[in-house]
Amino acid sequence: MTPDNASFRDPAGFVFTQDGVVLRQVNLIYSEHYDLLMQSGLYADLVGAGLLIPHREYGTAPSAPAQTYKVIEPDKIPFISYPSEWSSGQLKQAALTTLEVQRRALSFGMSLKDASSFNIQFIGSRAVLIDTLSLERYVEGTPWVAYRQFCEHFLAPLALMSLANSSAAALLGNSIDGIPLTLASRLLPIRSRLRPSLLLHLHFHTLELRKHQNPSASRKTGHVTLTGLRGLIDSLHGAVSRLKFAAADSEWDDYYDRTNYPAAAMEEKASIVRAWVEELKPKIVWDIGSNRGRFSRIAAESGCYVISADSDPAAVDSNYRQCQLRNETNILPVVIDISNPTPAFGWANTERRSFLQRGPADTILALALVHHLVITRGVPFEKIAATLAGSSTSLIVEFPSVEDSQVRQMLSQNTAAVARYSETAFRDGFGRHFRIVREQTISGSHRTLFLMTPVAS
View 1 (cartoon, helix red, strand yellow):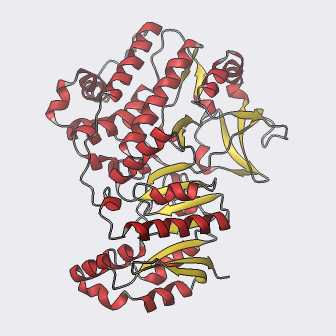
View 2 (cartoon, one colour):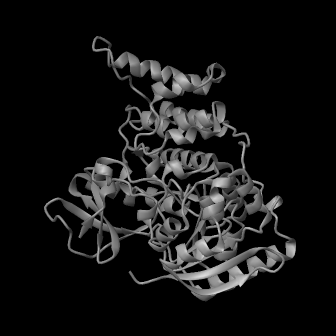
View 3 (cartoon, helix red, strand yellow):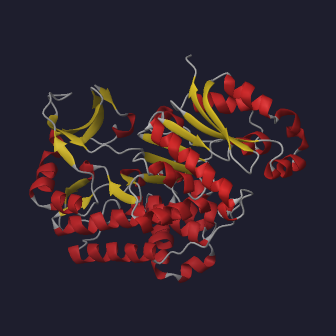
């Protein structure tokens, strides 16, 4: 039995892995709430609406019999992503999903005790609550205990992304506690105070928090009716729904519209990638530098689950909107800069795993990527290869030669990279970590696709 480092904080239970199966222990202290969830109809309602991850009660010996009530087996999430890796559209959808769960819960006599953004995961374009034990019996007259957490994890970063700077999501970084309301209130522009919902839930909320930090201040908690609580949820829903996100300045969102590929060459590239992915039959694919996900969708045709990663939030948000429009469930867009990927963080740097620790993938697509890493980011071919080899069992990588027009332009702006960028350097660097299975030059271009597998260590 291996406990999950991300679930030690909740006394109601914890996640662990046994014989390769991910399980959740329900402790005796939570038994009343678990029974209400299952018997009231709320579980069936949320699962039926696609808002809660389904589970089965698992017939195995509990890991801690003295405190165990049940052991359940939730459906497995293909890939765990973090709020700092989501686009504005994804974070907004996660917020609305949390509020919808709370709204429905109140109708069944329950309430969310926890509104952490980490409790939401995406299965393709669909946001779903994964923390079954975050729902508890609602006690008439009590306020929503997760109100502040919702504002810190959702409303504050979304308001900043909408009204201050589209890159404000970077403030989430490696924080497990969202964005402090005092910080958000200071960073938001004056015009945010003209919006009643933001004035109430962020600015006035901040004043209340400051007042309660004063030892002499009263800490009275008023009686909150069920009608008032529902009104709070409606108000938060309106605040989130009204936030709009202008198209951010993007270097790569229109990449496919201005590519130096002739149309026939692009189609040939797509055909090669499709054939190789079908041959490999991967279950999990990482498309690194995916832009708006054109080749992620080609890979997904084989039935695999694709982590469609790009460093450009605007491109990722465009990709996510396509996923929503097409109701795609096997493509997950995420904001990942492979030259500076999400690190491990939280308690002892083990509570949340790094991006690379959440692998390996069966196959990595590195298309139109390595020349940017070498020329712009200064990462040697050998280091790129070492990282990719440790994160996958097969690789489809594209190498543009120095004759490629885009490479020529990039090298003209960074002459220091000329000495380290060549086909020989590429083959030598990748040859230390991979075996070339197949290579094919794309007609009408100066680019070659390589299918590789890692060499035995």
